[in-house]
Length: 495
Image 1 (cartoon, rainbow, N blue to C red):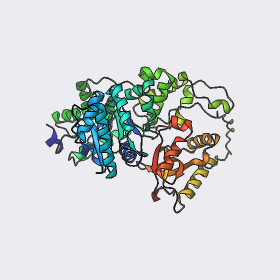
Image 2 (image 1 turned 90 degrees about the horizontal axis):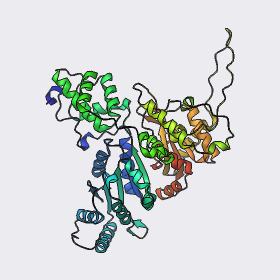
Image 3 (image 1 turned 90 degrees about the vertical axis):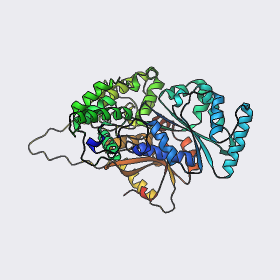
Image 4 (image 1 turned 45 degrees about the vertical axis):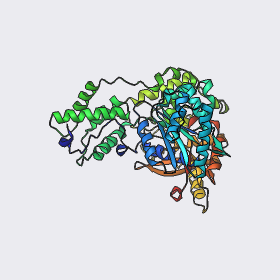
């Protein structure tokens, strides 16, 4: 209806996933690249989780488009199937007519077919959309399929896309064997409010729009608040706001148009993950924290300047050794609620900290020295030099990554555009106390035009060695981040 009015060739905010409208910002593109790498060059089950409308299905469709031709992708859009129906569906996608055959016959036929594919240098991956709705016995059948192998090589890979309920399902004791085989975890977080305008205009231009930005700052702010950063909700509100502007015969989307769209949509707040029943327990709160950390990647969610310590009663100074005790469930719940409250502030401009920094009690309470009294003749303070640990690791990283024939693979712990030296210094101080400082490498990077750091762990000759290194990561890092393999190239040399 409004296409001609805005000079569009097609609707820009369709909620049906169309790969031409895939937005690679907010780390969606990097998650896609990591998924392709995980399928091509590693083994293990992969899990991708995100709230309703966060973009899981779009990511899955993009994966289908981007996989190499030698990888046969089997896409299961309806997970509500029995274990037998699952086997029949996979056999059907592989052009095997096994209708009516016994389960053991199906499994043996699949084994033979997959072995033949392996000999032709072909691979098979099963992509399960809405995996949280899959019955437990069907999930268990997927685990048994994953066990099919020839020699040391797995014959089939599995990627599970699901809502956070999938994590709750995998936490059940009878699912521990499947959970232990998940080697890569990716969390799709809602897009931050500072990215929403980029997303809106990307979709507009993908649909043929050639004019200036049409969404006012106030309109973008209202869309961010009402949508909670969920792409499907952003699309619905933007579509209705365009229609409201068309009715007024205006080309600028203002807050009143978005407010009309909100009233028409009758959206019910999703509720933060901290409202889930599971988060009342310590394990659930840790799951929330891992989700906020976003697969160990910093998604510009603007929460880093929340000073959690100021919101808490001052803790008595303790010995450093005592600080290694993890926070209690109550302490984490308070912190999580503070983070949720901060994310609701409209014009807060801050960045997510890694879990290792954000949701940890202060490792070393800092006692501020008394400020010297200022006099008329007082000289201005001399800026402090870069903290020694940060400077050391930057120089060491530059030297190590500049060596010809150096290692090709590392383990990415996280990256961030919060480059305040004191924050990195605290992270490195904890690494030093863990005895792992020598394994930390810091590479300066650009994130959306801003300076940032990529934090890596270890240097390895190949992906197999890196996988072994990932298994040997300190448990603190496994819990705090979502480590992923990172391929090094010449561009990783520090400036």
